[in-house]
Length: 118
Image (tube, rainbow, N blue to C red; front, side, top):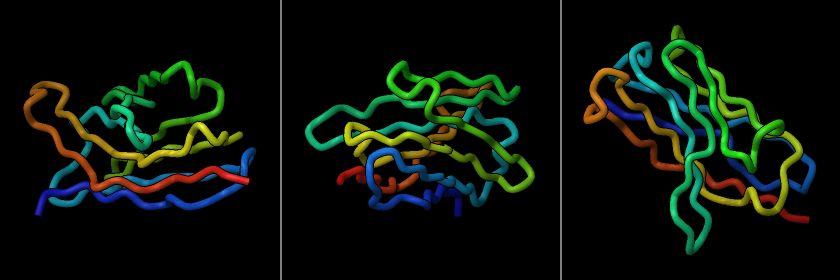
């Protein structure tokens, strides 16, 4: 079965750190751009971070300097390391894999909740 499974979400206080994981099953991520999106209640789903098949990364301005996206192709896993978390980072975080040669070949995870609150 082809799927992406996120893990690592939770509740934490402002200033804390959290690492999200996204593990693929049924396919290898080597040929896939890996992305993290997030969606807050009542808001659109926004792109947070991207890592290309070559390891090139890009970030939304709101998370630059605080979040780091990583990939481990051997483990079929992408990560989102989140530091200095703020209440406005509260959202459901989704993992997305997109084939770099065929954008129609893409998969979404089910999402994991991150809540930042004092």
